[in-house]
Amino acid sequence: MTVKVTKPAINVREELADLRKPTGIAGEAMLRAETPQEQFNLIGAGRRNLIINGAMQVAQRGTSFTANGYGLDRWSVDTYGSGTSKTVTQDSDAPYGFSKSLKYVNGGVDESAYYFIQKIERENFERLSGQAVTFSFYIKGSQALAGVPWYVTVNGDGTGNDEVNTGTYNITTSWQRVTFTVTLGDFSGYTITDSGFMEFLPIISAGSYPNIPANMSIWVTGIQLEIGKVATPFEHRSYGEELALCQRYYTKWTIPTQWAGYQNATTLIDFSVYTPVPLRNGSPSLSCTGSFYKWSHEGYQVQTSPNISISGGSQDQFSNNSIMCTVDGFSGGDNGYVANVYISNLEIDDEL
Image (tube, rainbow, N blue to C red; front, side, top):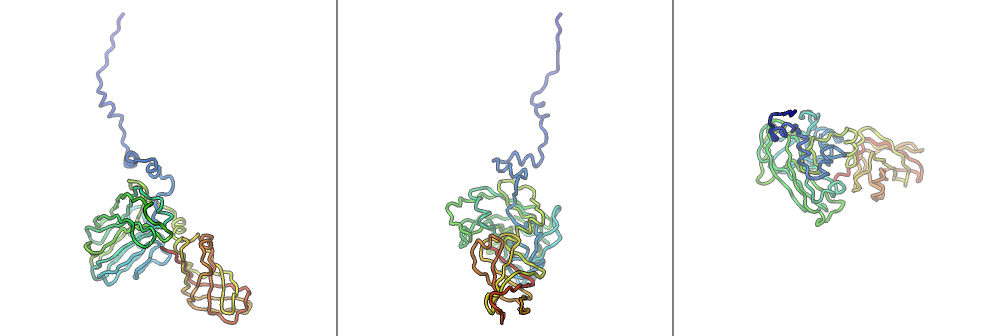
């Protein structure tokens, strides 16, 4: 007996299409990745973000500033053009997933020259030679501003830029994420020393670029630099880890601290300061903006905001978390005796 079986015809293309499943944003990013390293970064294996304090959480120096220079940890904000004043603060207005931002409030006159900057030290940028890197950040303004430039530069020995990468974007009145990718040059042709740095300026202006209008406010946070051509979600680190990264460059003791020392001469006290983490191995400066007490078997003496100098200065003492220090200006001490010190508001600055 012959049995004849029939079945409907199928369209192979349609069947294959039905097998396709949505990949989502993360899946598409994995498919676009061109190297195993990019895929490694996308799945979150290891630390990605080379920017420190990109979420603006750490504020050892304080939370409000009007002078040029460093304010929130690792971020320097300078104005040097036509404007009359500015205020930089740590602010709670932030996009979803963030709690803090850096807020810049311009004074009553348009500002023609300004920049927000973070310098990245040699040990962290030298491995980026010839690589594609992606920067991203969240920003908004109290009013719209078009054609705002960003800069990425490499200054191998601290004396001048070896390369400059730049572009522009628009600030809107709502939080938006700005992303861009650059391929860095081959650093083998640059002279790179411990004084060198790579710098990222999410906001800069001079010359033909737009002024910041009078009384305009700008908020920025979630700043990230990562290897590869894809901007991944911002890498949140714990506050403790972020603080430790910042303390490599700046540490402030906001409560009085006691350190062991000894009388080195009639007027000199030598003592050791132990830092929370190894410093950058640069030339740190120490300052005391309060009272400096010396205690010994003879009693105590006090100075206000004395000059603290570093004894020696070798890189080893900085990388081993200790700094030998000297304060002059005391009187009547017996050489060689133990003399402990008690310091208010001690600061160590080792920024680039």
